[in-house]
Image (cartoon, rainbow, N blue to C red; front, side):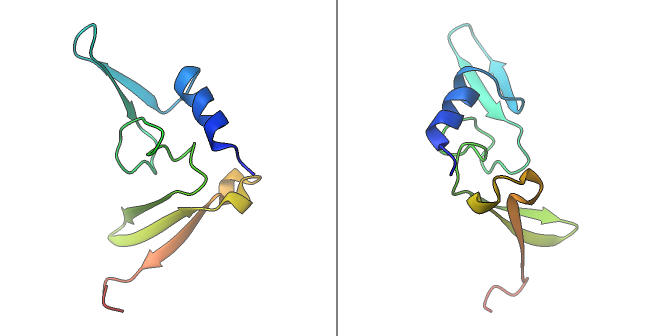
Length: 93
């Protein structure tokens, strides 16, 4: 099983290829996340798709809405880590 806190420590203090910094002033430094499954775009512990074993997001692709759920049982296979579920246009179903 993944250790979310250990992953976040590495991402936050060492290196993350999705992290982008925006610095307005010397004291004001903001970090953003460019990961395609990031829901907020802000780099923090609660919204990091890499450091949370329980994570889900909704994306639109070609006019269709999909729910992506991170499945911890598939962590050994990064290609299959995200389960993709098609959401119907009719929300009352």
